[in-house]
Length: 418
Image 1 (cartoon, helix red, strand yellow):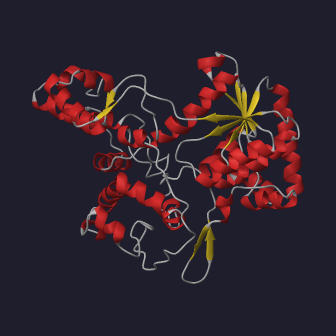
Image 2 (image 1 turned 30 degrees about the horizontal axis):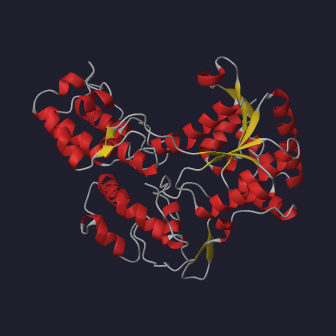
Image 3 (image 1 turned 135 degrees about the vertical axis):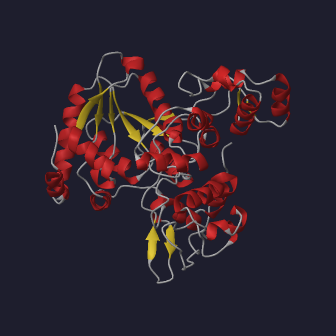
């Protein structure tokens, strides 16, 4: 099934009653084809509404909550409270652990540079100049250097949590959208590709992308490692063959294109545990909007995470609420005004400062320098000095922000998971 964009626009203008009816029908049809359905839950308003809709058909449906370790505490507490209040069949998906010891990126880089200096880098390269594997590089580490790196604790021990912090070390920071950050290899592999690969391109945009990538440690791999893979692992354990998601086409252009080309319920694959059997994705709320979600919550008096009542008041007196939940350290909308991190600075300043001081600020500074190609305010100060300046230069990278509206709701504290 597919839908034209113009038809989607018309559907989005329909009444809430119509949309409830469509969602109800989609849920009913999806349950007819599923042997073991489940529902993906984020602790946010959309998935809360979806859960309420689906439970009217299947009250005991398995609910898979993706706890990435960098979720908003308000949503974590709300999810656990809701599980008790609604007696949910809740399954928490958490990041996995490493199955072998490995070097931190700084250590991998030193091994890489040592092999280049000694003329041995060819031993770990493929024919096209790409790194054969991260493991091959680490196994080629000279014994004296290995002792130094271990002494400096540049090692991830076996069984290390593959957390947000592990991801930004091994892959990079989530600074740009998924459509922009396309390479998902570990950073040391990308370094090798950019340095040695014979791959050529006449695409000016691609070459510009590679130019930024040479200077900035950016990646979207954390979404797969701490969110997608843990959820799919739980799905495999439960034998799930259909997953309900509270995705809406109004959220982004990518989700709009996905819905218009695939429809409400579409087939995918989970070959690792289902083999050739189909795996289904269902998005019953695809034609809904944020206004519909809040109207449904009001109509049925549903609880929701207190995160959505948080925000800040600007200098003109307007109050800006947090609109979406998700990983606290996600900066994929960084290049847009009123982005996620600018809101986080006002509502959860301790969390914001943790992300920034542990490396995000330095990479944002490099990103600005690489994007502009000429000196900016970012070149005049260190990342630490920039973090102290107000108005905050990190709030809006599309231009110079001259308004300081720092005051916001109180921070509830933040305990970063390592």
